[in-house]
Image (cartoon, rainbow, N blue to C red; front, side, top):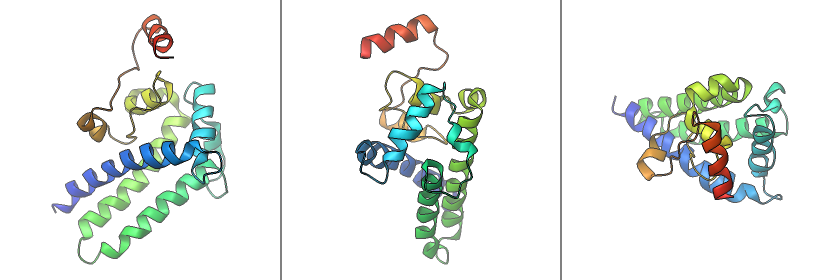
Length: 167
């Protein structure tokens, strides 16, 4: 049963690492497979007050949401050989991948829900520093590693001042 908390921590660390180094690191280069994240998803979220209309498309396609789902399926599949020796860990990793997609999609389809339930992810997209708040499902590793920057809920006047101060 120790596999469950270990799987949750592992998955959250993976969110942090992949988001920071793959989706933002490699993804800033337009020729990268991962460029969908920065050049489509972030652009749409900023333009539409956190809403991403691309989530209305079917998940099966060669577009941002299809690539996101494909990446999650590939990561999940890579962990399946561990199932015979670590079933709780593997099951938790599979659950975490599904939960990541579920809450990420819901947050960007229903921005008010996202702002209320995934404040750290809202802050990632809408705050002045999009190179912070790397976690999506839970902010654990952002808190642990000092990359959690609060933005949501601050008075608009202060937010505007901060955005100009960091620009």
